[in-house]
Length: 111
Image (cartoon, rainbow, N blue to C red; front, side, top):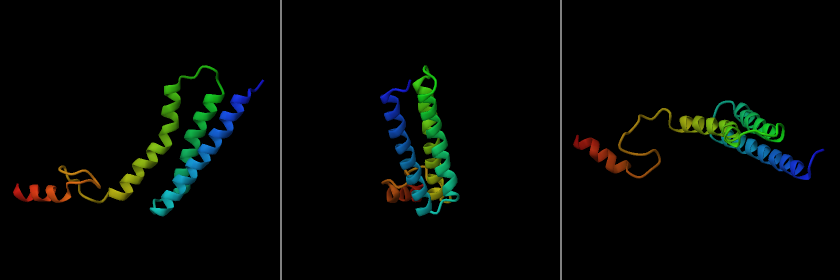
């Protein structure tokens, strides 16, 4: 028999998955990343697979589920970062979008 807690987890989890996929799709279209539907689908598949695995078998290790759930959003974030900063040359003296842009260029001129 299905418990009320299981139903609540399924409904809330499904809403979170759809919200995450919508956020990924909107962000990918805003930044003009190629194939935004594919990235939203990857988030749905990985997070939905984690939710289904959590609700299905009784003894699933939580660390494995977390790896499964985080895979889709993490891969999208790597692609997002690469799309935003991929063509710029690497600067070993400064973090991307961080402080140190002027100081790093001054250090390069000294060398």
